[in-house]
Image (cartoon, rainbow over all chains, first blue to last red; front, side):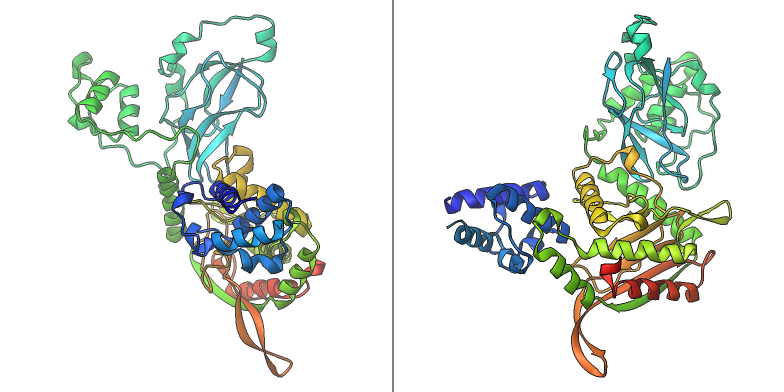
Length: 81
Length: 399
């Protein structure tokens, strides 16, 4: 899956969590929790959505590797091979 | 013929304002359908119907505040519909004019906590009930309206004309979602009442939650994301068990006395995106496993965030738990939600140097606070209650 596609899916899922924010305007290098005002339950829902969309079960210990959109794309790209 | 009535959504609710109909006369409805939106002190709530049949006629105007139990609509029951009993054409129900019987309905004195703005002063102004209601709902001062009815009385059309003339932008409520402005008014009313009536006292207790974090990490390591636990679920379980031991923090203060609740139904304070707050209850949280509690919390947050709060989900919370989350502050001191008598606050978990067995170690610390009602409990009991929560959090596996 291309970077663009992964990014688009992530933006879509984040859009479900923070519907009032224009995901295309979100800085990919900003901490998602700060940029979107999401809490631990929102983040868990995001991780759950990734699990469903990509079939990747992200362990808690890897959460810090997904704090920005850019980092999340890189992480998933590596996992998807 | 059945009646769809203004439901009671809590012991403190005396009246509600009909904000919107989601059906129209002639529509078929079935048990569990959401057919109306009502604004209460707890925010805008979607109201379900428990009859199956057909909407016959609306009995109350949009924007009207009516006491709990007031019939809002007539419903032809399934049997009547099947039997082909035709009562009358439904078109006339589109003219939103309440039947004469409405005026006989007991008119309670609104409590000072009324969530709507006070009606404009009307003095001895002559105006029809429909005109008064419209004026009230649109904040039109009757004194500024020229009446065209009998004897110069102000009628419905006069208010309509006034609204058009003044080109007032009457804000349209969004069809399904929450009205955040209405919710702010409701929060303001409830919190002002709380600060006016409840003599709060505040306590803070710092608790080492390192054992909790370790337990959660261990539990979650082998679980897929959808069944992982968060600290919030463990915290809620601990509070639910603690209030069972300390019942003076679980219940309602009504009519000058405290009524402890036999069930433990903690309200979970949930921030609404865009500004706003609600605290729906999780029933019998003390008897749910941490997993079941977590599932309930996720479901509740999802419903709340997607603006689908239903009347059956807004139950009477017996105590409130508030947490500002991991990006929050060290401690929060909540305002008690009347008629409850306590609110427990969780700050964010922070790494702190802590003395454990004569050695200074890095530990995960959380500040747990209690805002208590001095009419019901004292600081001494409050301290024991917080200590109990802290103790329970030391052995999360036993919760």
